[in-house]
Image (cartoon, rainbow, N blue to C red; front, side, top):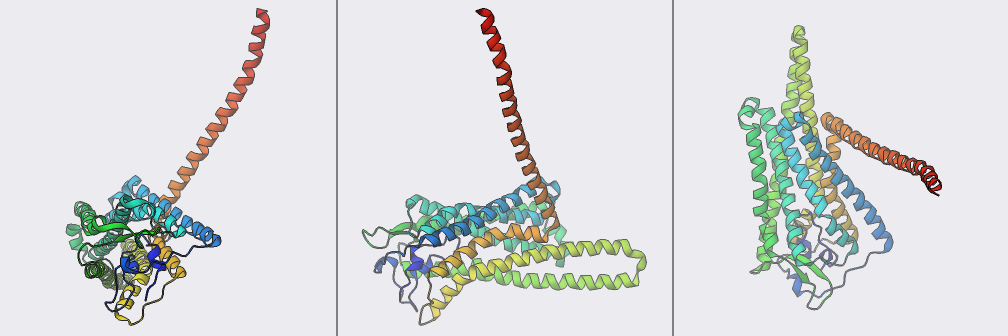
Length: 391
């Protein structure tokens, strides 16, 4: 029972992507990729290549520009820099920016559908960077969830636990942990031909000892720590946060009816809760997108483990998986623009400033060209007169 289309290309930003290339038989009967009879990868037609190129180009453009804007506006705005939540959001944007930028070579090879063609060095470095960025992105999502939980449910303790210095310390710990978790990728990833002498090669994680059992253990641990536990944690904490926020709204309504003279204070409390609700909604939608994006690969893994027949995969499935994983990294800036007034306002300022600079530069260039042409014309008669007088 072999599925060869997924083994031809490995989506870069999937935590469990390469398992489809190495584990497609069922109930412990899987064999190493090197032991299979190779089948040449199917070539995509020109229409599919053009369509995928446009689709992925749009997603990558939105992801790189959007995450770059998030990083810029947080660093440029002093008020936004003071928010501990925005520190985590900026760290998430940095991780997503790396995923989008280093995912470009993977996307090009995915569209070409001819295996890995960039050599062993980039196989290790590129996959390592993508895996570490994905781990850091997941840990940032969980961290901001925990920070919001402490700030809303335990507001008094938040002044002690969620200080700016401690939050920066947490962010500083996220990347070393992600690097340590991604070490197997840089140590054991290598370019492997489908068969000795076969022209198509793959960038795969190959463990030197007990590959099959070690590989499955690694992938299930990866799934547990970077998919299942984060999803469960965020669902539980955001449920508690939602109950607390809506209970606070009802409590404020009761106080407002009882104390008409405390209207200003109540209005300020309403605005605070409203702002917090907006942030929580934004973060919940981000978690939902993450869940939807990485669920197909998880379903494929667990289904093929416990089912007697493997889950069929084909080119449409691959395109859907690749699209969703990149949408996950590109969607967060769009969510910030929709749900956060501060981000929306600063995005507009930044874009207006960039447009103004471009228009000003174009105006200066046009003015200089016109001035230069006028100067050249004005110099010609004087040169002629001087020449005539000399004669």
